[in-house]
Amino acid sequence: MCPTGYDALTAELPGGGWPAGAVTELLLAQDGAGELRLLMPALRTLAAGGRRIGLVNPPCLPNAASLADGRLPARQLYWVRPPAAATLASQRTDMLWAAEQMLRSQAFGAVLVWLGRARPEALRRLQVLAQAGDTVVWALRPLRVLQESSSAVLRLALSPLPGNRMSIAFHKRRGPARDTPLVLPLEGMGHVPERTGVPAVSPAVLPTVSPAVLPAVSPTVSPAMPVGADHVAHDVLDRGASAAPVAGRAAAELA
Image (tube, rainbow, N blue to C red; front, side, top):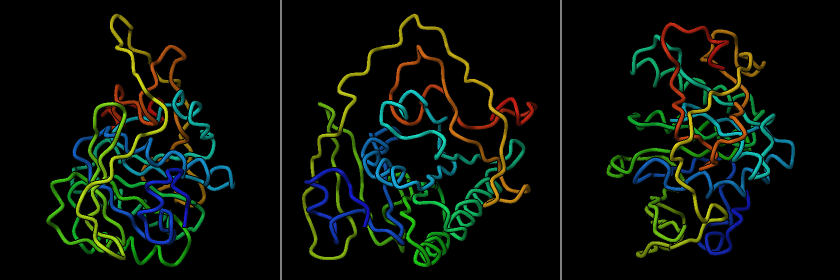
């Protein structure tokens, strides 16, 4: 088990933490519901133990300002994006493949994979691969897939609430059912100022890297990307900067 960092949530999870060697499915009412702030204490614990953290197909670029604020070393964070020319179907296939390779390598302490449409067998493969090691796996998906079957051992629906709080509904867990959502105050980020009049900041250029865990033919894998010092930190992902590659630009310009 991986500590959650939240006593109220820990008390509700079988084993008292995020399950290691298993898939947890987080169903999001909207992107940016605070899902990564919810996971930050766990990611920090894993990083402190020297474990790598993989972000597969995140909707936005990693935000170095928030990583530093959350004491999560960027050098231990890897993000994977689909090739620029790939079709949506190919992107889904490539991103699932990348997540599977991370799990097969057993070189990562945590893998976060953003999945929209995915067949039940895709989640089943992730679950089987996770069981072979001790990686903590989170599959982040839209709430609309709630009616689909899932092999995840833990299934939570996350919704933001006023006052820097989150509603967590327990749709699948081992043990007794919970009929009412858990309302959890999130750490940090009590107020995010508006960015009125602030010019857009271009991310610094970093070279594309291909770790040994993923062959050169894999989707692009990059270390976490820094942003300008005047960027307002909103979460671990910068929702002002899409992680989707831009067609026609070299990979080195985007990594």
